[in-house]
Length: 469
Image (cartoon, rainbow, N blue to C red; front, side):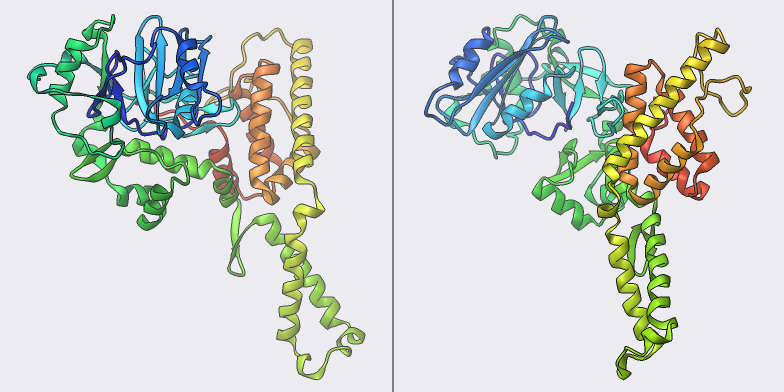
């Protein structure tokens, strides 16, 4: 499930799960009980409309969307679940297909800037990518509680509420501030089958309390970037910045765990993984292997250009000094070092290493079957005995993996996660066993210093679980 970054415009009047602070809009022109008919509304040839429906075979029910017939800048997204009723939400037309895809997964609805509910549990916005499983990690919200329409109806005056016509919708209008009255009117006119006690409106959780929220400056500090950079990301929709959880006095506010997980994903990105194995060299940040090649060619070129008298005599008098030649040698060396990805096919090498490690795991499984009747795999802890499962990886394979880590960290991180995922799916090897085996092999045969190696693996392997969740 992709990160949810789409801003809803309004609630449909017949939704079972209204979104707080959004107006209600008359949806009586939509055939909400028939997903094929919803799709057909938008399938008009020669127009700028579109529609689609799909069955959700994993979770049950269906989802559909259509461009509104009279407002082609807006689209209706509908999600129906046999046990939880339907959500009817109005979005900008350009966001409709992406919202439709977001509903393909376990999420039944989204609230508070991407927090999502699967019918039982609330989860934080999906940000940290599980490259082995090819999906985001699902992290439950501690102490979350569901707020229903029945919980919020006290005090609302339906006589003062309003339901907009689609022609009157302003996607950029701020909240009117009388949503309780609108909710009371919705409760009278909705015509839904879901009881108000099961009509989910939003969630509450300690991390979403107003006094726990943080602003853009603190979010930027957590991510290790300037506040101006974050504001630029937000204005341009870049770097998959999460939606704010609330707006207080006109300022966007985020839950601290959301900011921390965004920073965690930045560290685990290809650029972040590369940074873990990079060093400052001549004013540039380079993977350690590239820096080593640069130094080696600098020494080699300098020797050839300066230490050999027959070569030195070919230089013009004004260039016949050590500093000038060293600078040229350094430039030549950088050219050679920067050419490494073209000289060595690191993508092909990563695939070769992946297949080699998986073959080592198969060999380890075979030896286990031959020499032992152990049926349960487990990984050694700090005080465990030596009988915990760990598949050995031959030194030449480990050294090639280490070379790839030092020279192309992002490709190496991708290869390691592909190994873990394929071992889990194809060989029934728990990821803990694969990760432990790779960690042990690198600890024995890597040329990286232990601290750098540990930081690289921290950014690539499964994040540690917060035991307090």
